[in-house]
Image 1 (spheres, one colour):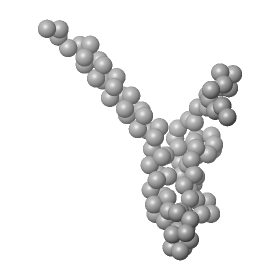
Image 2 (cartoon, rainbow, N blue to C red):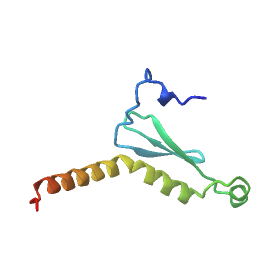
Image 3 (tube, rainbow, N blue to C red):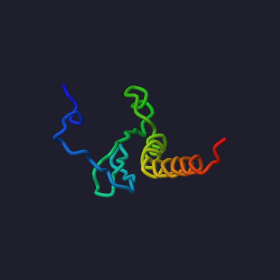
Image 4 (cartoon, rainbow, N blue to C red):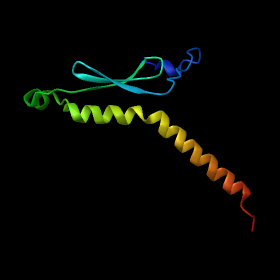
Length: 95
């Protein structure tokens, strides 16, 4: 089955920042600025259910969701650092 991103006629999704975390019943949803779900993390407060199903604890699921929500901000920081390094390399004296 082909991924829809392989189809050149399908426009790329934007997922505009900021991304936020919204708690739902048994899960956390990471949403973009338009309210589109970007990712879900699922949890259970019941230790027996977690052991049987492999679900995360509430704290683990929230921590992962918050980390995912930081992706756009981290991409901006990385781009800024790369641009600064490229400028510094271009301005460096040639030996």
